[in-house]
Length: 187
Image 1: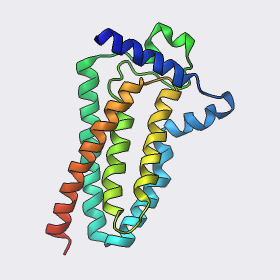
Image 2: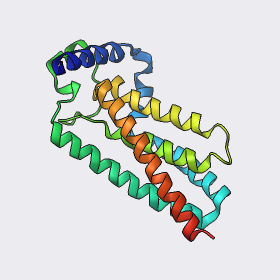
Image 3: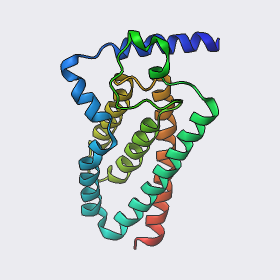
Image 4: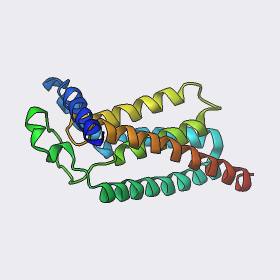
């Protein structure tokens, strides 16, 4: 059963990875880099400051920093525990496309997926009362970032799916913490 799931994951990876169009490779390689999201983070910081002022912004930033640290450590723990090779380390990658700058050893599950979906969940809940469509835009961004990991050849779809599910759950829990801290200290 487990081997069947792995085979399905490999086949789905190859299908999605090979959907790539050479003329768009630059876009997906750029999107997969963490630094590319900095302008979005700056806009989100401004929007949070604009609506919940400095103290609310500071509380939110501290909670997001704790959450990112937690999600990063959790992804590393899973990678070290499961030790599932990334697709770029597998022989079948010759039938796919590897575009990333580097290929870490283990990939289950995606750190990009867990952190992107955690940020999208927490921040969209913080901004939801003020911006009607922020949820859709942030989840679209998280989806694009995580799909880029398949596109460049460093994660299987199961790595992305698992990271996204954990990210949404953790983002929601940290949102509750943020809400509590804002209620307690942002008066």
